[in-house]
Every structure is written in C-alpha cells, then in structure tokens.
Amino acid sequence: MSKHFETIAVRTQTERTQFSEHSTPLYLTSSFVFDDAEDMRASFAEEKEKNLYSRFSNPNATEFIDKIVAMEKAEAGYAFATGMGAVFSTFGALLNAGDHIVSCRSVFGSTHSLFTKFLPKWNIETSYFKVNEVDRIESLIQPNTKILYAETPTNPAVDILDLELLGRIAKKHNLLLVIDNCFATPYLQNPIDFGADLVIHSATKLLDGQGRVLGGITVGKADLIREIYLFARNTGPSISPFNAWVLSKSLETLSIRVEKHCDNALKVAEFLENHPKVSLVKYPFLKSHPQYAIAKKQMRLGGNIVAFEVKGGIEAGRKFLNNIRLCSLSANLGDTRTIVTHPASTTHSKLLEEDRLEVGITDGLVRCSVGLENVEDVIADLKQALE
Image (tube, rainbow, N blue to C red):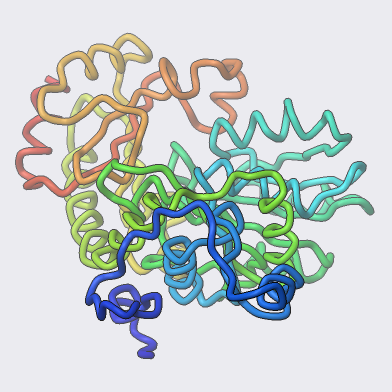
C-alpha cells in the first residue's frame, strides 16, 4: 500500500466478497455465524480474528478504523457512535478512581462537563491550564496525574497549542498525551508525530464533511486501544455499520475537501480582518494569530474555522446572526455548508460568564465554519449581515 495520504484514503478497503464488488458494501448485520463449535470457541477466545457481533466489530467499522489508523500513523483504533462516545470511553477505559487529569481549559463544552460533573463521581479530578499558560503545566502535575489532554485548534476560539512541547512534558513525567484532533483532521496535522499516545476525532465534523452522520474514533498505541476496546465492547457505544460505511466513503475525498475548506476560510478571515465592524479575527494561518508560528510548524493548512469578534457584544452578535441569509445557523461544523454560531448565546451559554471569558468566548465572538460554496457568496453574506 502507498504511503500517500490520498491513496490510503481511497484504497484501504475490506476484503472483497464472492461478488467481486468494486466499492465496499454495507454489512447491516447484528451478528456473524461460525463453521462449527471449535471455530466458535476459538473465535470467542480470540485465538483467531473474526467478527463475532457488531457491538464488538463489523467489516464497515473496521474499514473506517483502518483508514484513520493509517492516516494518523497509529498502531490501532476503535470507532464509536459519537465523538463524545470516543472521549468518554477513552477516559473511562484508562482512568481509575483517584487518578488526575491535566487539561487545557479551552475544551469542547461536553468534555468540560465530563471533567467537572461526571468524572468527579468516580473521584477523578482535573486541573486546568489556559492556552497562554503552557509554562504552568508542570506545576499542575501531581503524583496521581495520568493524562495530559488538549484540543488544538481549540473550540471555539481557534487557539493553537504546541504539540511538540506537550509531547516533551508528557514524556518527561510519564503521562499519556491525549489530543483531540477534530478541527485539524489527519490531513492537516498528526499529533502522534509530536509524541501523542492517543488521538481522538469527532467524525461527525470534517471527516464526514456533509452533516449526515454521527461518529467518533480513538487511535494510537495498540496496548491502550486494547483497553479502550474492552471498555467499549462491554459498555456499548459502538458505531453503527451504516455510519461507518458513510464515513469511510467520506474519507475518500477528505484531502480535496479540506484543501478547499482551508482556501475559502483564509479568504473569509482576510475579509473579516479588514472590516470596520470586526474588532478581532482568529485564524491559525493569519499572521496576526498569536500562535501563528506554532500553527505553521505543526499544521499543513489553517483549517476551516474562523473565530471573530463583532463590535457591540451579545446584542451585536445576535443581530449579526438574525441578518444572515445564505449561511446556516447551526451547532454543527465541518459541513459543506458554511455555518455561523454565536457561542455566548448558544453552545456555551450555560457556562458562567467568567468561565466563558477565561477561554476567550467573549460576548461578541462568532464561530464561522467555512464551507465549500463559492467563497465570494459567503463573503457577500457576511458583509451584508455585518452592515
């Protein structure tokens, strides 16, 4: 098999059936059959690799996993029904009561809830560092710290964390480095190259790229994935064969889609940076981004998310959204369609104001997931909504 990303995406396929199909079929089956009692015994004893039951594995899920494993240069992986299924199962499998996490404060809202509301029920605590306080990470590490966790780029403020630095810290203190790579995709960034032990994706976003299905995946070191697999096999957050099939097909066009997303997003960011009603624009490949040099070091392109600040606070943000005509108002991102969200009044409205502001979600912040329309039409819509 080629080492080239595009060839891996297109040519990684399950074995052909007796029908010699060119495109992998759907395997909509709950279970699988065995030749005889010995075949069944050996399969359940894991002496042979065989699909037993679709909650454990399924040919469609395996193909999707194999593609992401190859793209991320990982050893193994496991797929889930949703991105949060992947996040929770990764922590659930690898942490014990009394363990400790050090995490960047800028994490997805549901991940924040997991750290603050649910993991504490099992006596698992989290200490946070801010994006601009990476020099504080080592002071937060305790004897019971097991995982160093971060998203980069972050959601929704599009900050960048230095993966090489995180990798060094994790190695020095013998921690597991877990990175949510959802905003970048394996096409733009490979955290394993910088020392990550595990990489998580919400496949719902750019991996699908068309706003159709939910999915999640964790890839990385085989011994850690084995623990995650056993946890998921017994708790049941497995991906459906249909969603895995859709996602595997989506990956065939990931590279060309993401190239175009990034091209459009940079043009949108440049337009916004010069607009009088916009006080701040954050896009990793704009020279004005505070972590521009780090983004250039570890990312191929800047991604499809642009964060910007509308002058005039929450009211101005709401007014801007009400004036949008072409773009979609939605909580999703990474779609073919451009989506605008006002986090302060929607996705992050349940956070305390001080918590919101701490992670850069100001009253006027707008997150724009730039799609694949003609970029001139997207810019025209943003322009009329601002004015």
